[in-house]
Length: 78
Image (cartoon, rainbow, N blue to C red; front, side, top):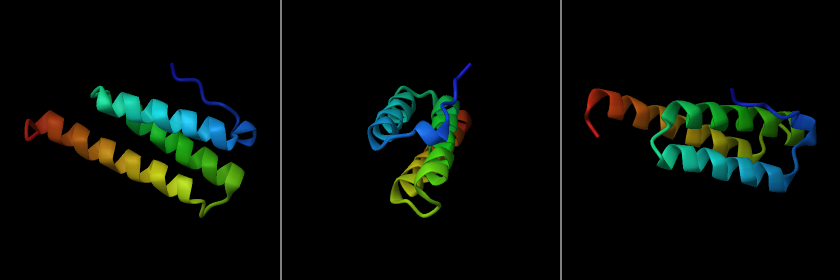
């Protein structure tokens, strides 16, 4: 099970580390995990740094990309 850290403990360095973790999951084809990681990170960034922080948008864009790749992979249209 993926452990979710407290968003109030989130530092810029930790956000960067978690973004890299989500990117690795996406690159390895683990799209559900990547989607979850990006989504949680985006929510945590918003809770810690504010709703319109650009890092949250980056995380949500990653989530959308992972969903698309997962759907393409499932359909065989990759």
